[in-house]
Length: 294
Image (cartoon, rainbow, N blue to C red):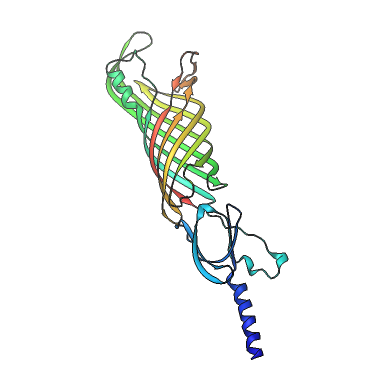
């Protein structure tokens, strides 16, 4: 009988050690010794079993936004001196995104433009955009990284009558093929925290913006320029798989050219715009894309 009770005490001791092998620390600083039974990235909750008042086994759950740190097998170390709190991130560490969609130049058309010239410039405002970004997330709500943005619009008019700088009327084709690119550092912040399936994010980017127009007014020439650009974007993100989410983004890109260069293949000329006028290359974007989570 003594041996039996000795074995029973030993068994209970082993159960107590092996049962509470995981540790959850809440945002309020409470520590929960437990056994985690379910913790999938797609779930909003962590499910676990714990001993209530060190007697009764109970099942419970916590929303992931209530958890500060989570350490599985925390009590499996061989000695108390070797215990280290190894946290498991409940948000992705890196994201890589790709997107594309419609873009519209917001700059005003000069009041002096009329007739077919105004119609031509209106059509030139619309184009398509492509983008990519890479972010490192330091927390659930903040990240920083790099982003790239590309815009293109094109219009073509055949058999136009054009008056040159000397007042001579010329008969020929008109074309504009505009490329605007931007690469810059960026920061992102989440507006809806604690939801593992969907969120809103707000991004800010500031950096280098280049402008190229491969143009033609009877004869071909190229217009180039560069400036500092600002991007403000708002995105709705929806997770569809463990490491993949789709997003719908609206963005405003702001930039102005104060000077540009014209190259006709023979001569090059730099045009400096005066203080009262600059070329507005700002645009609005509506994009759909996806983002890989790691």
